[in-house]
Length: 229
Image 1 (tube, rainbow, N blue to C red):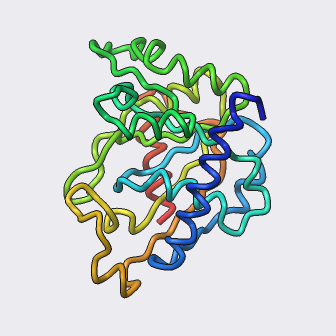
Image 2 (tube, rainbow, N blue to C red; image 1 turned 90 degrees about the vertical axis):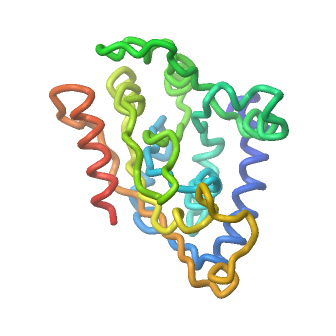
């Protein structure tokens, strides 16, 4: 771990251990497929998952802690966050995303058919992977009001192709019922009665998608994530 990583690792550990306790208390939090993490614990990796809740970052971090003696090998996780959330108008969110070591994702003003705009948008993510970082990406970028998936973007597959970094597919189940777009930020009756459940499933690392192009690669990846249900 570099000196630059120490503060994000400390903040993430505190937040994620706290989140894990709350998730176990209220959501009967369960994690499957942790044995698949052993293969990539000492190398850079791209975690790719669905996105249905404002607390998906906490769910992601807690899932790496639960039942794992190797959790120290995964922190800090570098989450990709849109550049606007680093601005002061989003205070205190901007402070939090900086403290946890998030990677600034520049939205392309002009999206090119050959995806060359991604070189600029994801330059910081490529730099992080080149020095062994572990990053977490939500290809959908956000979530619909009903919890249904949005059309995924090609960023994760682009990073995989450019850096040859393995992908760890992850499926979060039940997160759409907890602090989704129009769900309240206060405990609901179902939460207090532990009726809402959250489960995270880690798939096996993907070293090659064997796709003819980046669009097909993204489709194959998202299909593999859905298969984890």
